Amino acid sequence: MDPTILAQVLRYLPTPTDENLLVGIETSDDAAVYRLTDDLAVIQTLDFFTPIVDDPYLYGQIAAANALSDIYAMGGRPILALNIVCFPNHLPPEILGEILRGGADKVTEAGASTVGGHSVQDNEPKYGLSVTGLVHPKKIWANKGAQEGDVLLLTKPLGSGILNTAAKVDLLTPENLREAIDWMRMLNRKAAELAYDLPLSAATDITGFGFLGHLCEMAQGSGKDLEIDSSKIPVMSGAREMAEMGMIPSGAYRNREHVAQWIEMEPTVPLWLQDLMVDPQTSGGLLLSLPLPVAAELQKRYEAAGVFYAIVGHVLGSGGRIHVI
Image 1 (cartoon, rainbow, N blue to C red):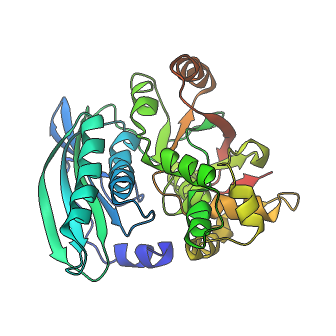
Image 2: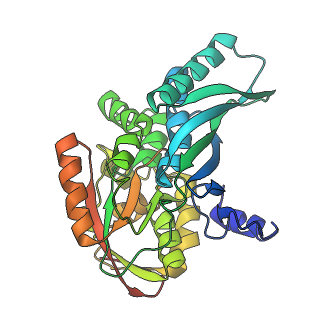
């Protein structure tokens, strides 16, 4: 959804008053969190979208990984998933079966259970999950709370929106398409679990609003300026070439317009990289804000476990803006 439209819609929703609602809609966080007891809170999220790859099984896996990511971005563990399906009558039911199988396999990989769902007839297929997770009320990760001096760490490269756009017109090599699919269907489980016991300041995942869009939510929710070193941004194979060819999804232009007022972009940052930072991501990585000693410990853990990461910037003083150098 256009981030501007979403912001307008959220204004019409009533302000939650239940003191047990620990995370709601106030800062556009990744999921809602509701306290059940002093030691247990439930996380609830939902996400679904139209096919971005031709293979129905891989589509199911990507959509499921994308939905599950919101639980990890809140510092939680997924336990239950419900399928959300829109499917046309003219397509063979075997295709739907493969989509559901892909989603169920990814939920199982996450250590959770698929427990049903709901379907409606629609002219265009759509698939995703409503996911429930658990977290300790005092160990919730939120997209606000970044502190001055923090390191910003990203756990997947950018470029999936651009590469998916190029794939639709057969400009992408099979190798680059396969790599992009593998990134999108990769769970953020290991990256999250290795950080569960560490004192993170803030966290989110990078999805439809793009890297800069989700950074803006963190900057404004935290009341801090963020500085991004564009030379440190990790890029999926082929994404630069496709961006330079103009394979930019329409959502990137909406994202750019939405964040423009909060971004200070150095003129030395190339246009293709500017496009990459507003590219709508599908099942992107976690973006973590950590104190420097905590970041050093997490880097050691990631390197030992073979988890991808990149240090992309740091947190400055009070503000709410982003400076890209």
